[in-house]
Length: 195
Image 1 (tube, rainbow, N blue to C red):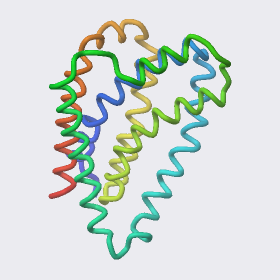
Image 2: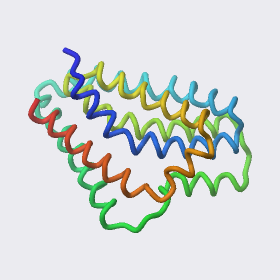
Image 3: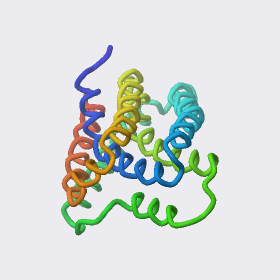
């Protein structure tokens, strides 16, 4: 049964990842152009999403005797990552996310091919999928798919529509955003653990 509570908690947990992806998309668009970026997204999605779906479908079969433990472990991992993000937001000084810094370094030179763009975009998609897999394993595959699609579409839409205004709005607010997403991850993990 579809749960809007799980969907909204997943979207909250993905909020930081979506914002970070938006900034990285802006840099990649400057590096590769929007056309190549969109092609890279299509190619990366063609690779990452089926592999993730196979994992979610096969996990119950592969871990049949341990499946309840695997479900709880997925929820506990989400809680641990959420606590880590929350601690990061409280203890670390404000700076741009590591992925944004790395993308800026890549922007300075090198060949710009579709294969490289696909690799870079796939890495960003894996961050979203890593949060979604525990949802699928815990019996919420529709919520996981819905949240993942919303995350990718929102990231691309905001990057295409607002471009530089978006970068100015979020600059200096990464710690707060990561803390809010950390809280949402903890809530999502608790929902999966006890729901």
